[in-house]
Image 1 (cartoon, rainbow, N blue to C red):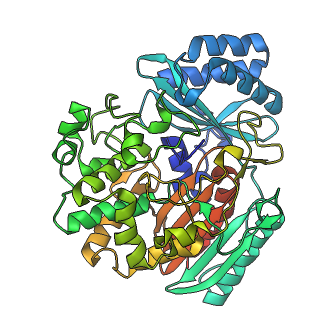
Image 2: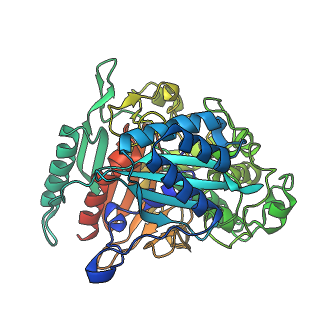
Length: 510
């Protein structure tokens, strides 16, 4: 989906949590066996159980009955009930039935449920269920995410080791993943201000025979939310804005009166505002070029808030489009121009020179679209509709979607660490975890940054990006003195996450 960078909570959790956070043992049942996972009796949970039964039945009549009863006629992202029915039939054939829930992510919202289903063959598929607020018995979105197979446990040196050993271990791990075609892209590893490993892997364009290089621009998904968070904090630091300002105080023409009165800048930064998401709007048309934050905002700004601001976290690209519009209103500059002047240039990022940057090579995305390959079993396909969309422009959305190089993202993290973008106190404010990403998850959201904290480890501070069938996987993390930048033209959950998660765990223990 175009620029759909972890649009809702399930994918946000997968993007935020390193692989080891997703592999905690299930609660034990009798005789030490894992306790069966109970799907809740909520609107989304009811649909999830019916979905599982229909797929396990495997016949077209059962799938048709499920879609007829549980799928809204008004679907997000231009889908139709018939399209859903065809995709579910494909899942039934690939999985051979036997779906069982292996992990739930409900986030306390009865109208949302994320389920990782397991199959008899040991395969996995993630499914998100989002109810239609106007008719909660029907789902406005059911999204499938091919999940990676469980591989062998990666081997890294035990304990703390020297810088050269760390770099060699990471290079060996990434190289093995690339050799097995589980990774394609660029990896940059730095200790302090020194780059100790920087290498390109795989093909940027298989059809043209063009390889990835260190200068290849690769889609970053939601990673630029960090940049938006910094831009907002700069205006706060200058006294031109407050985190406690209401939306109405800075955007008096925002269409939703409830949002104007009760949503604050803090709520928008932490995904606790309850504003809509453009990719879930019935008005969103894939492939359409929305040129400005306000054009994105028009897709959802008239919708009612999903919950009382501050009540919970619900990942929303829309909130960051609103923040970009706030930056424009307060600064008097188009968002892209402001970011170029106040983030890219001070950080020494090459993207500050847009004309030259656009001449750099770009990577075509390759993915396994859930519509045709829900279990991720077939060869990757080129995302033709993504071609040319990764290039940075002056009309940035605020929530992501631009193509950058790994070195530019490293320069951004260095400028942040060295307080060239924000003062020391404001940097701490921006990077401090504010709200829990999910119940029991060791991950909080700060102001445009995830903060993952595990026992006996350095916190991992950064952001991931990408989405199902996008051919985009990106992760930028600051871990103690280390910085890891991983950009991939394969998918986030199925390809990048299993490769990068163990690297992060290794770095966090150094």
